[in-house]
Image 1 (cartoon, helix red, strand yellow):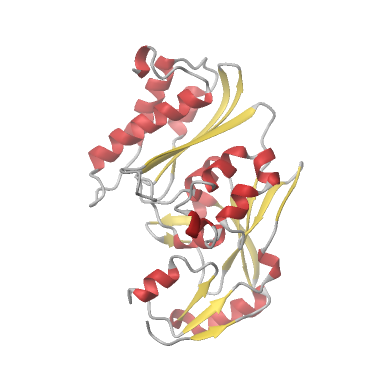
Image 2 (cartoon, helix red, strand yellow):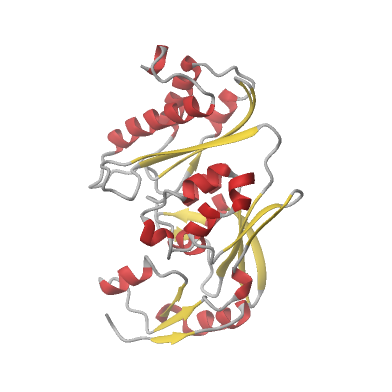
Amino acid sequence: MRDFDYLEPTTVDEASRMLGDLGDECRAIAGGTALMLGMRQRMLTPTHLVSLARIEALRGIDFDARNGLRIGALSRHADVANSAIVQKHYPVLASMASRVANPQVRNQGTIGGNLCYADPSTDPPGCLMALDAQIVLGSARGERVLSIEEFLVDYYVTALEPDEMVVEIRVPPLAAGTDGAYTRFLRTAAEHRPLASVAFIARREGSLCREAKLSVGASTPIPTRLRRAEAFLEGRTVTADIATEVADIVAADIEPVSDARGSADFRRDMVRIVARRTVAELFGLDMNEGALQ
């Protein structure tokens, strides 16, 4: 690993100026789980690391009924998973966070760093997309707020400017009667990165779906909202046949990647299965009945 200087700003403005002045020669570091791996493999050779660890404005998890949930960018995945606030108001988010990667990553990696890395085969972006999350970016120039769909631009690419950092993630409050489910597919039990994932948020009355938000991750370059599938579900009584139909729509509407972990056709098939299971789980359908056999 190449030698580097380690800088420790205490405010967003100070960190922003460092990032802006040093340009491509530096990287911001939060938990460092992905960055340090890249440096050890000599894929990245920054001359400076700008640590965000001492910036208190990036910490904390809180909630109010009007504005919803605020997650500071330095919150670790374990913090999100174990937060009583998140467990009470957004159990699907806590459940997702409890399954990210492995215990070592969950106890070191941060949710802000995860989003900035924009790895397509990770869990938080897709779940946050189905929850209509917003990403707050900060710099010495001020703050700007982007939807997560605006923030995630492409494969490992975000809308971050060179002098910006993620300050916090905002999740709007859920309407009464809203539940969520997050399902992922791993090729083997030893793998930590999903090959396919589906996040499904629904406002429902028994088996009647009033509102649906559905996203697919891991199999596409960036998480994808499935708005045709959402429209299909809204106003319908969800049965096994409906779950199968919506899964077919989801599979048809994605553009899966093809790589060493799985071909595009295989990923599409897995997304179809995962989507069907996720809808069935949320609506309490028997997986062994009818069209779900």
